[in-house]
Amino acid sequence: MLKESSLGVSAQVTAVATSLFSLPVYAKYLGAEQFSLVLLFSTIQAWLSLVDGGFSTALTQYISQSTSKEIGRDTIQTVVRSVIACIILFSTLVILIIVLGLNSGSLPLFSGEYDNKDELGTALNLIVILGLSRVIEAVLRGALQGYRDFSFFYFSQIVSNLVKTGLCILALLAFSRSVVTFFEVQLLVSALFLLLLSVRLKFHFRFSILGAISLRSLTPLWPTASALSLNSALLVAATQFDRAVLAIYLEPARFSEYLTAILISSMVATIASPISQVSLPELQRAVTSGTESALRSSFRRSFGYSFAATTVLLLCLLTFGLPILSIFFAGTLDVEAVYSWVVPLSICFAMSSLVGVPGQLAIAVGRSGSIVSINFLNAAVSIGLGTWLISGYRELASILILYVTQLTSLIGIFYILPDFRKRLNDAAAEIKSFFPAGGFLVTSYLIVRVLLDQLTGVPPWFYLGSVGVIISLSVYLVQKRFKKAQRLPSA
Image 1 (cartoon, rainbow, N blue to C red):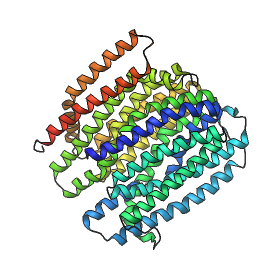
Image 2: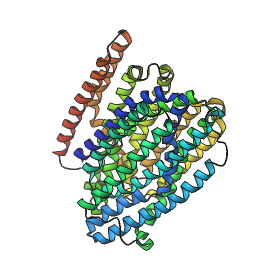
Image 3: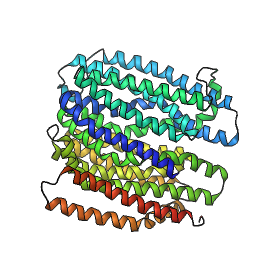
Image 4: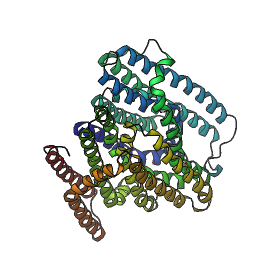
């Protein structure tokens, strides 16, 4: 668990580092209008991920259960091929519908201030195709996670991020400073990554991409996938509706500043997300075993890692966010404006990070339907408040929506778990056991905060070096605490 989580966190740290390095370059060479499309991609991709229909997560769960039950490899391969075939067919239909729709008229983006409509349409066409290729990638990733092949997946993800960033910057500098070129390179790297995942499945797990498919073979996946599909739609509505509306009301420069703040703040949840991802197979096996001690131990360990990582990342972001933004984005964006949004947004994303492991446990014990209820409430709040407030309050309304929905999720997810008081006590025990390391972090935060407020002209290496020292010492304390816990008998 610790090794897999560490690899995942390393992959996410690489993604964050490449973003910090590349986004200022994109902002400088693309300009506000085209850069806003780069940032808008994550929102559009979230809506396109609905094509997945919940099958990638359902596939992870199915393969994890099947390997423990010794279901035949041919049966598993038929299920995977059938899922891929259905998603490719559906994606093709979606691409045709959206591309024809985009090319049929004007687009209500950025208050009509985007000058080059033809370039905007071409870029959005590429965004749609790229987003749907990521959906197919999610299915293959789900298969690798089901086989617990986290090492290869995260390593390939690191390589993909580095190659993608390097090629995009090279293309912008050497060929064309156009957002169309940017997304063409992104699509090329995505295709190569899909090929790499397919080759891994082929030679390491003797998986054949070509072979029989059967809709009937998807029957075991339907209960989980149908619940997750509705859940995903509600989740996207809850988290992305406000950003879609903001794209209509805000001019490109202001929209770029706010989405940059969201991107920086979401690093708290992004870097910690692999912990919840790798926890699903382990929690699933603990549920299948029917042993309460195993389930409790798995949950406490996973939640403890998640809480520790989230706390470290949140404090580092609050402490060093402004100077790091100044280092990377000076001269390209209004740093003060971006950081003013980073502080409240980072707290919201910290709550989002803590929802991950309890949410995976809810899926493992078959409470996906209850998660749907929570996200239905969040979607209603997001759409209701977004429609009412965003036209007048813009970014402030978006932050309020995010805060309300994440707080609702954090409270609701524990409530729906079986023996929720016991699960809540387990989480509280892990938080309490983190107090010694947490005390060190808070003290470090206060000391460094005072130093930064008093000193001027501090060199960049001081900020970056201080982040590294705090994280390194925190990780040491956390690992020491968990090694001690693992030597004790399970509760």
